[in-house]
Image (tube, rainbow, N blue to C red; front, top):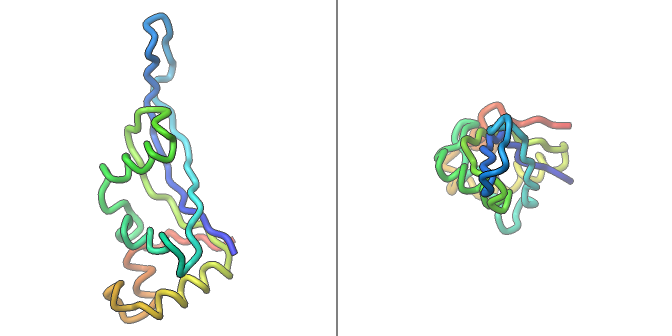
Length: 124
């Protein structure tokens, strides 16, 4: 059972040294973050960060990316790309959501997943 949240990130490289230059100064990269196992601490990450498959708060998304990269670069932009998962993880996620629908303000796991992840779930 495995899943990752995948984000596209644009970072700006700014050397501290005046005798060093960088070209290009901005680069696009992908960050994949392991999703917590359903029912464990942090499993509701998608509910707290996403809305209809987009970051609910872009500034918060930039702060998350900076933390993930341990401040290795200046974060210009972050976009959520997908929850990349296997079938076992997705089924466990649905089961956990069904047991706590009130928290998601939804009538079903399908509705909750659509509400927060939109169509951004890829099962591999």
